[in-house]
Amino acid sequence: MGHADSGTLMAYLDGELPGREQSVVESHLDGCGPCTAELDDLRGMSFEFSTAVALVDGPVPMLRARANIASRVRTGTASASLRRVPADLLKAAAVVLLLAGAASAAIPGSPLRRLVESIVEETSALIHPQVQPTVVEAPEPVMATPPAAAEQHSSGQSLGVSPSLGRARVSIQGAVAGASITVRLVDTNVVQVTAVSSDETRFESGAGFIDVYDNASGVIIEVPRSVASMTVEVDGSSYFVKDGARTRLLGPGSETGPGEFVFQAHSR
Amino acid sequence: MGRFVDFDDLFERLYPSLYRYLHRLTGDADVAEDIAQEAFVRLLKQTLPEAEIRPWLFTVAMNLVRDRARKNERRQRLLGGAPIMVSIEARPDERVEQGETVAAVRAVLQKLSVRDQQLLLMRAEGFKYEEIAGIIGVAPASVGTLIARALKRFDEAYRASGAKDGSRR
Image (cartoon, rainbow over all chains, first blue to last red; front, side, top):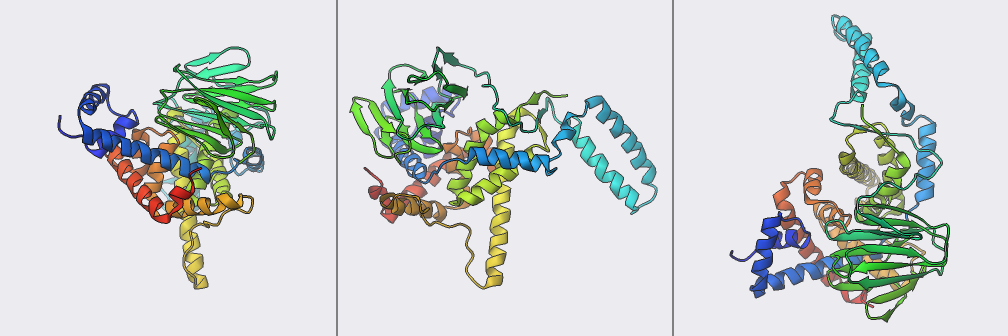
């Protein structure tokens, strides 16, 4: 192949090329200095961007947002209760409304016609207009149970996930100020989070991410050296970024050994 | 009829990402919070395939950002001032030594076109190229090229701002 353009190299970096094309580009890079240099540039710029934007992040107001949304739902801003009406009843209502709509169609511009049209439109939208729809239930004041995660590896106070498309994220929430967070680069393919002396740590995970609800003395996070992009956040602020082979602490902390970083929660 | 999904589950999975995206995009924590909440409230009125929920949320949020920018512009015109979309001032609680860099990063982001910001910030949130293409309205095959160009533009502006070296520790 000729030289790869920057779009192809970007897609290669992000794991977005189809398998065969990924192999072709990989082979080409082995013997092409200019393309390898271009790829390194893109990787470097990507790292700088991740690092720079992480600096502007602040805490995510989870509790306040959840309370506000629940309050708006309760006061009727979102008619969540309607979502729980049985499908058969909705269908029957829709049929009646459609008939009424047809009858009223003989009177162009009538208020009844406009009203019926608007109700028919809203009701129809509720009756499975898409293939395999998902209905969102209204918020409840209890925490969800952890979703079943594909590629999840759990053992006691420890949970691991595989990166998704070469990317991963660990987000620690509810950490005590000063809690010690250790990030360690390892030669495995799994991001592993272990709670230190805590019986109450709760994990939630999904494709490439682990959310840790922890109020204990800290956690240890093992990061695969092979992961293309990785961030560690505490209460919404980014503390550690890995992009390609490059790593960076985004606040006070130190490298305590080869590939091992330690920082304290809320030290940013 | 489709299956029910738990709101708490969706909220825990998607709110931090949506809030972070909006905060980075607008540079305003209050605006990000308002818009993210509004998008979630609107989500409760929807019936969507699960795979479409995240792109839908981000699309709605982006429309709300545009609406707000238009209103701000109108207000500024009526007041006779220059249009201001967001504040790039550092928050008071930011450390002094970080404040200038943070403000500079925000300023650099604001120099990019909205599309470039969307491309880079959605990539940072782990969106697949196909999803980004759907939200922005471009061909999936062009996303890699557009991201590479946006990264280069960010890099140039970041270097020119002088904040790039200042942010290194």
